[in-house]
Length: 179
Image (cartoon, rainbow, N blue to C red; front, side, top):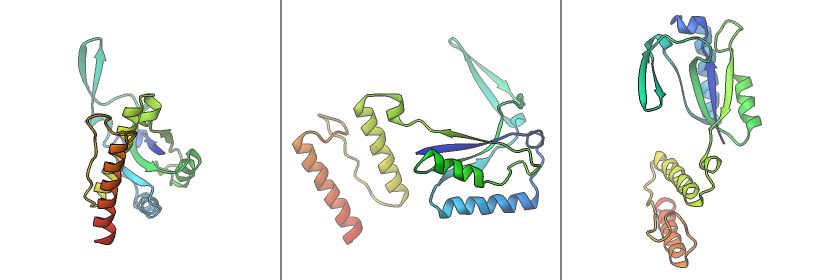
């Protein structure tokens, strides 16, 4: 399960006030704990909304609005983590130092939707799962053959495609485990 931890913006973060050395050290320690636990996918701080741009849609018309924006709902940073449960994500949010450094910080925790949350189309769900697996293996520096069958996409219900899939799996294991 993937969760986004949003650091809510403050008047200080919107004014571009830099964090204290103590807060930077505490955040670095927190980030290292996330990495060591293998749950950190990505994270970062955001510049004030005065440097941002908002694109809005009204029917077919798009409108570009330059920042700054109203503080309500603003975000000044984020972490994207992958954990086993909502409870584990909440534990990580609770371990975070006060991101404002003033005793008035806030973090919003939101679960990312996955393909199965958005559709009941099994082919799309299988494709999303395959894409994620291939991306993760490639990020580890492993060469991965991506299998898509003309007659059933990412599926392996037909016996001939199952055999092709097993063959590709055996080749992958031999290449990366046996050497």
